[in-house]
Length: 368
Image (cartoon, rainbow, N blue to C red; front, side, top):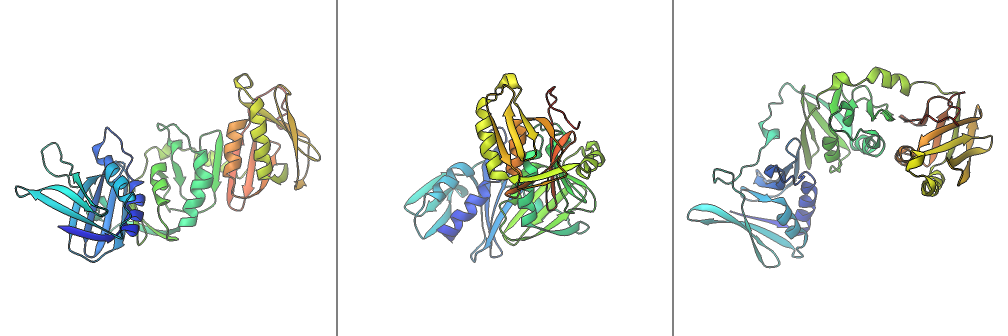
């Protein structure tokens, strides 16, 4: 069996498909890639053992199927400079034995076998799924990009909590209990908790319209060239969505708008004077003219002027500088609107709301 494909196009496909293989040394399947030409469509499949990534393009030719080890194969394909690459399966004693990659010479790759000595056949959950009674919606790649840029930084890093996943229902929410991000976009009629690895894979897509089919615990996101299959997370019943939504909708007494880039520059300088004895804390003092940013030992302070200010009241609070910086960086506009005067800071732009919890400190007048 042979397969011929334009090298540049194949390199692009392999680079995308590789993002679905996590190369877990304890899970051999995560180190593999299936290459299939069937019914005039070339498809590459990879997995992290839970989520599956399919990258495909139209390609005429005879049916072809092989499973290869991702690492060496992807590196080889990326280094080819020929116009066309040919994959050829060769047999030994009547059994498929090796894959020959012809392009800039001849390169021979061993094929992976299972523990029974049989060539590995890659799982194919998309084509094996009975989706006849699944529900379907259409979402946008721009929505996924917004989730990855603004909601992802607020996820919990602990895998054993429900807050490591995205809550998606009437709105999209992420939190680690110190940071919150809420996006006022409806995804599903029934709330679902989706793993971050699944949403990360959607970033491979390039078409704006994404079809999402879903059952109670499985989902298939698809565009003409990319399909992502995954499972929902357990623990949605533990997600305190009502309390979180109440926080997201809570009014604040005062607000201001400042330059995001300038604030990040000041925070970078302030971080030089913050150490473990400060518990990573800095002070924000809202004055009539701007926000004064200072460290606990009074070794540096700077003022960032307001672009706008509404219902000003003098206010001082203490924040974890790293927590604060990650939320500021995730803010999707260069003009940062900060709401203040309560037990957190709230950022608002369009349909996105972000919260940063305050640190307890005697000097701060939190809400007084």
